[in-house]
Amino acid sequence: MAENKLHHNILAVGGDDMNVAAEIRKDILCARCKLCKLLIWKKDPYMERLEKRGNLIYHEGAEHHFFAYCSWLKEGIIHPELLVKCENFLDKQRGAG
Image 1 (spheres, rainbow, N blue to C red):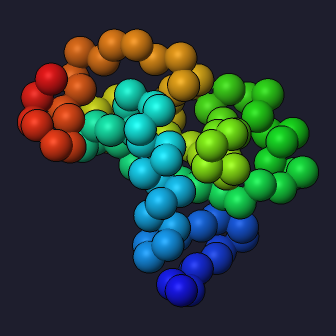
Image 2 (cartoon, rainbow, N blue to C red):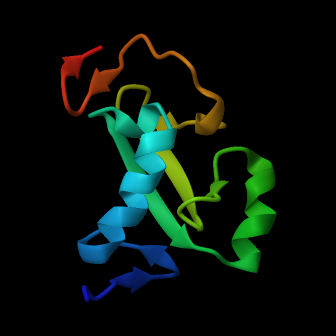
């Protein structure tokens, strides 16, 4: 089992934690983009209070909170789970899309 590197409850994605990131990416459009970076936190009551801000999302399937940062926009995405189209989407698998 891979060892998690924790810093203030932030999960550094690697090893078994890649499954968490993959679970999030399959449901969230911008998370599948080459320009998206995910920060992932384990479920925590403190994090639930921060969900009201709109850019920290709880993913039911992965059972983790996550934040999506866009390198193109240079900022976090508000409600990435509701995003349906991005003009600069670069698919990690197929290139531009």
